[in-house]
Image (cartoon, rainbow, N blue to C red; front, side):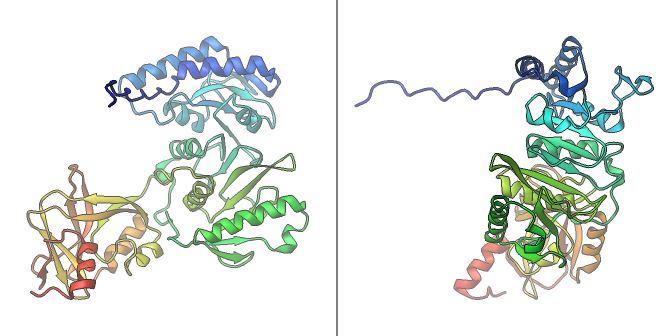
Length: 420
């Protein structure tokens, strides 16, 4: 019999503070002798002062999604306090301002064509610049023109950081009313054919074919180059997307000693489709969607995933955002169809939360047939969301006992319809 006390639970290691990250960055710069990558490198003392202020804001409870992320700006990018083409800059570019407000710390301005290099080397976590993205060993993201002012290209060592940086750098009011946040469970992925891939070395072609096979195995519908698509998938070394098209370039290691990666292109304002595919291929968490100007809503019946009307949500570009549980204020009833109806009551119900563009939400509301309608429901955490409910006076059968539409459907498959 073991009488020894149990081993204590391991204490999780706290992430490095912004102050520590800056010290490590300057140590790496000294060790690797890469000062030549920088046009203007800020004094370490000045950067440490800003990093310490970031750490104090975090300790005070402020939400800074990019706290401590080290930022390199491209040649010619205005950075407050650093000399530029027209003398000492009074203010930074809009994109740099937004990134630093979210907690990023500027190391300096990289030299011409050096932003990806300083990100890959580990000196910086993020890089921003204007121009055409250089798809090397870092994640390279090019937003729809106009979403990120002055700086349409963003580099990062990690996809999660890249997505967060795109979100905070983008103007929320720059989004149109209509855009897609998802292409459903089986998006159409177009790939180049033999003729387009012929100039590539055999090793790169084989690696690219393996990526395409992985997409197909994940349920994506592979399409030929030139057919309608949701995402265009190409090797990073082939520029087939065209100018001004939003792209996400993903590093996938090396082939024959050279960096290998892919580029994902979408229609304007549909960057989220490429980000989702990039997350799948790199096993990164999906995270919150990129678009800020979206509407959250809840569903409880035939619109939940796997049911027929979820395809309608996919057509509208809606995105599943997680399961929800309502407060104890509702009942579930059976409507003709069959369909679930949610009315006032005294129980909690299970459903799903989705996100959609403002125009998509209007289409959803206008497309509902009576007695279904959009009203507000309160969730168990106190948050209220618009939701598909129904007219309380509609003729129906009580289903509250199940509290979940899928639970009733499972019962239906084994015990037959519930009588009134």
